[in-house]
Image (cartoon, one colour):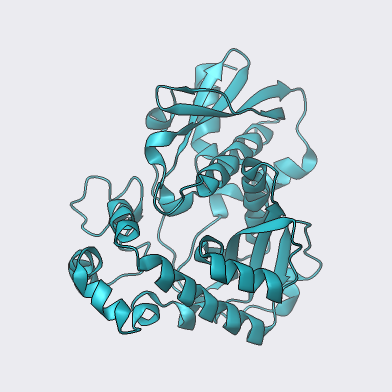
Length: 324
C-alpha cells in the first residue's frame, strides 16, 4: 500500500460518526498494516468518564477503515489491541490486508458517503422500510406510543446530564456557534448541525455557562431547555444498541456503524440519543421496558426516519491532521 492509497482510505474512514464530532481516531501506516489509535486529547472526561463513547467512536473508525479498504477491493483482518499510551495516543486496532474483500463490506462501503446525522426532525416513513431488519446487538422500536415514551425519556436524560455545570462547560468546548470560529467547519457541533437559529446561538453560551441555567433547571424547566421530544416523536423507529457488558466497546462501535449504514441503505437518516445510555436512571428504565438482558449494557440509541428537508454537510478535520 502506498501513501496515496493510504490517505484515500483514511479520507473515507474518517467519515465515521463520533461523540460530539470529536473525531478521536488517528491512523498510522506501519508497513502493510494500518493502525488505528485514540487521541486522548479528544476525550470527554466529564460526559464520558469511562471512555465508552471514545471507544465506540474509535470502533466506528475501525469499521470505516475496513469498509474503505473493501471499496478498493482489499480485505481486512482486524486485531483489536489496547497498547500503551504513547504521545497521547492509545492503540485501538491493527488492520492487516487480505487478498479479497467481503461482498457485504463492498456493498456497505457504498453507503458511507450517504450516511447523515439529521437533527431537524423526520418526515413520515413507511413501516416496510425497516421490514426484516434485525441484529443481536439492536432492539428496534417502531410502535408510535413506545417512540413517544422514548422521546420523553431522552428529554429527561438530557436534562439530568445538563444539570452538571462541568458537563455544560465541556459541551460548550465542542459547540461552534459563530462562523468566525476557526473550528466551525472542521469538528464539534456547529449552529447549522444543531439546528439552532442565530438569536439562540448568540445567547446560548451565557445561558449554558452560568447560573441562569442552574436556576431554570431547579425550577423544573430543564427538559424544556434541552427538549427534543417534538422532533423525536416523528422518528419512524428508534434503534436501541446494547452489547455484552464485559466485551469490547470498540467492537460495539463497529457494529453500531454498520447498523447505521444499513439504515442508510434503506433511505433513512439517523439522530443519536446517547443521553439515554449516559444517564443511569433512563438506561435502567429503557433496559427494563424493552427487556434488554441483564448481561448487556445499553450504549446508544439512534432515532431513524426519512429526512424532512436538507441536512447540513459533515464537518471534518483534514486528512493530514488525523494521520500520525
